[in-house]
Image (cartoon, rainbow, N blue to C red):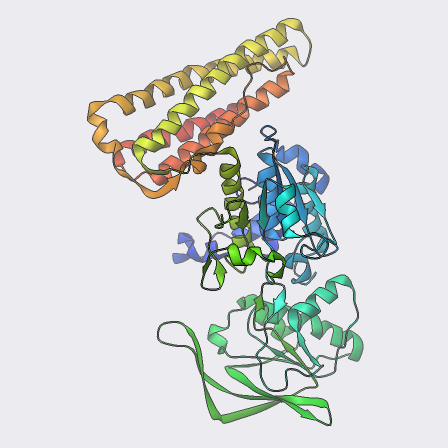
Length: 537
């Protein structure tokens, strides 16, 4: 799980699990319950055991430092991958604790803080520094980060609420859901009335509605809270389970209605005037609500919460905001989330979202982009099988050399009878020698494919999608044994495992990128053999 997701415990609880919707098993029954399986697996591991079981190690010191603005899913994801690549990573977080919207926008009953801390603490244990209560733009400038770090990633998320701008929303008893959710997390007191109206139909609306319903129950012994949304019940964007659980908690719903006016008498809110929403989107799928002004419903309440969406606060960019290129309202980035200012990368909700999985994915991709930028990895396009196979040959040549050195090194350790278990060194040497015999054949096999006249026509076929050299950067980053101290048998074996795991990943990627039937068998066989090698070790 950690190969593609450094926040598995969190995702086991709040992932939108869209993969289950796409699961082919769902066509003839229930899809595989990926989210629940992930949660079960992670709940079975104590936080103290993470390091030993996951056993993630830094490849090698890269000699560069990265500053990350925002400690949400994108920032944490990027930090995780960058620290493993050998970079020094510092996260600047404005709030008292890291987690971003996962901590300050999702209620604890949905995502317990101990679960959140479990994933974050593991990332910190790897060496990532997190500076909390440090707001970029106030406590430190973006200009200073540019001066202090070799690259900067901003991933500050959506922490500002959007208003409906309905007449009356300027009243002091109209609140933004996102502000109240943050107050709940920080333990701050705020007003909770007997009759509350929530405007919005997404998960944030459900989160604040259920949180306030619980506070009403504690304070008044009953729930009197109404949710209204533009969307009709069948197209409400909130997760179905969230809507059903809200109903079970006594929350009322008036879907398919738009706010028209916050009603105020003698300076106090008395209710919300709504009109029927006849459509939310136009024929092209663009947001363009239409209303029947004759169909009026007044919802009683003395406190109104707006939960119709969030927006970013990018004011900390200062003068740099004028130097950046934009696509519409969003900063223009390439596929590795690099902006027009080459040292500045953008990830998370502010570029693609909003949800945790997109945050994790963009953070991962941005980490690869930062590595490519700092290491000077060529950004040339890799579009043919021939170009991709050259990376495979480079991998086989490097890993074969390492395996040969490992056999020799383990033999010396066993003969010396020190630096580890001699018996384990001998057994490890024998296993690696068997693997080496096959691996030497793989190098020759790939070389033959690259030089065979009959296969040249196939090698010029295009990959299923165009990628870049950065995607194969694992080949460049593999650890070596030449020139290093003798070390322990366990250290030598770990280097070998790293090479074999990378081989599995490489051929698995090539299998997915390849559309040529003649080469499909080769890539599948090489992938499966590396999987077997890993299990042998």
